[in-house]
Length: 152
Image 1 (cartoon, one colour):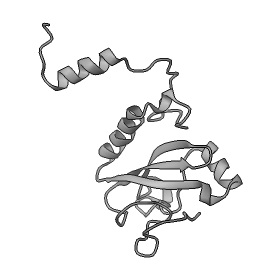
Image 2 (tube, one colour):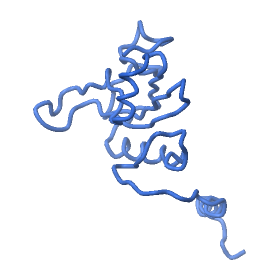
Image 3 (cartoon, rainbow, N blue to C red):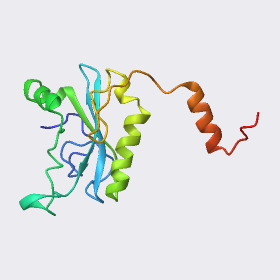
Image 4 (cartoon, rainbow, N blue to C red):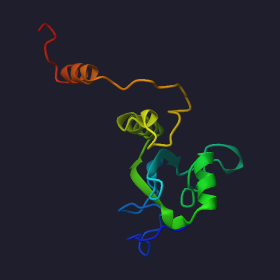
């Protein structure tokens, strides 16, 4: 699968991933797949090295990787490559950092609360979400982060 309009295709060897530098450092990266026709998004993570089996420790298929989502894989097969953008958000040096960045990003965009994001689970844990984080929750959390007084 090739990505159209890739600015760095001749100088960087990142497969179809759009990123401003050579990828492959650290443990892996956080990505977003953008469907430019359906206007939907999918956020995920990919490690650079295989963790299990015969290929343990060897470079993974990250340059050709599209997603672990069966739904997205089906869309790729049935539609032109030009309808998708594969964007690397950032690379991470540790597994913990990579996992946290994915979870944080999914929560930050409220992925489970909207049809725009095709993600249906966070860290392989699924639950039905029927409410958003309230403004009060956000305000109080921000107060805690700013070490503000709660006696008022």
